[in-house]
Image (cartoon, rainbow, N blue to C red; front, side, top):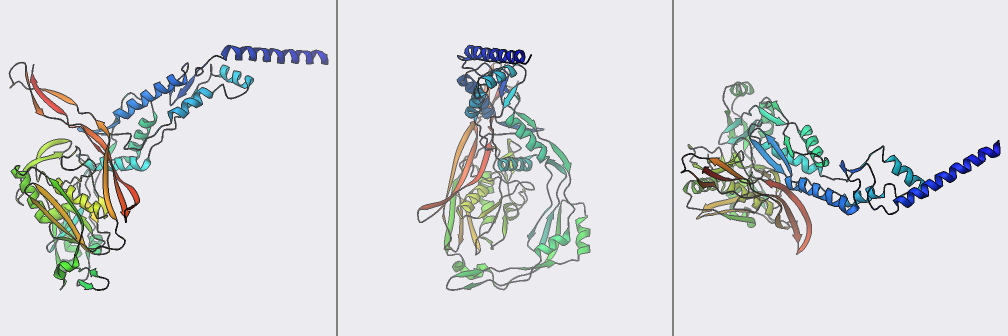
Length: 509
């Protein structure tokens, strides 16, 4: 009986070995990926390695070319794979897929071949993305929504504390949007590249006047110079409310968008300006851009804004705000209507064109190696600076801010004349200063769309171009620091997306 059992086992083993060898012989010439194997959800069964790579690369490149479109009501923008730092390793994934049912011995390989008829296997293409870049895109988009909630803000003008009340609006649901973006990145099977931006209604916080006062209250301090080495000690105004906290709170409750609360300002006896040019002996950085001076309204706005910016002094540690320095752009304050970008369109706007000054200033601050606090790119590319080197502004929502991160005060000289905008930054050169170079490159092109609109005022069968479009792009900007001709660092400043400006053709068929 025992011998019979042994004989049966030997026969079964022999049969298994025979079947395995036969199965292996049948499959020995198979150079295709086996059944039920997928990569990133895409079936590659029955494909050679070359065919599988071709299918997946085509799918990946299609997604990369499309990018991811974010939509909120009439607002939309496209973010690129480059902008999100997306990388794939399709070749490695294909190698893994091909190795399934081939990497073991005869028995395990055959077992896995049979198993693949019943159980599928999905291989990760190891798609990588930069979470910081995604977070930055979400932050940028959140600031550009037309109906975005705006926070309370304040600044000091003359002898008044100006408090700008925030406005109710929407905020981006950052976590849900981030999850949706990551899902679009990882899912090769997704047909649409569009994401509806998830938002929720939000209100600005209540204005805390005591908190504001604690930040602005100070004692006066005279400016002075010390020699060997030359050092500038900045002046400070003494600041305090001219009314009680209770009175200030009553004023805040008034139904006004902008509240003016009187201050007691005690001027320093000696200011940095009183120290003369000795306080600002060195040109630290400069930038110039060109514009069409024959555009009277745009020229007016740039000249006026440059005068407001000129001679601005920023003490160490202070944060400069472009909006607060230039003030609200109104007809009453001398600004005129000119073309500007708003909500993804070219429109006439009071103060249109002054973004060229903020962009010129932005470049000068980069070249001065100052700390950028707030900066946003335009919706479309600008004509006066390379992609990635502009800074858009909009009263009440988008500002350009930087911090004087140097040891001594700096002075801004700004001028707009004869079609040239120029911004210089003066101060004291320091031993730890670097030579700074800004390098921008367009990383991909977003082809412009052509839109046809019916215009019955045209003669039958005719058409006319009402807006000449322009391709959009994605860009990367780096700041390169060097000393004595040797590069010490190359830092990413920003990744930006500029949407295509559609070509609009009016026609009457």
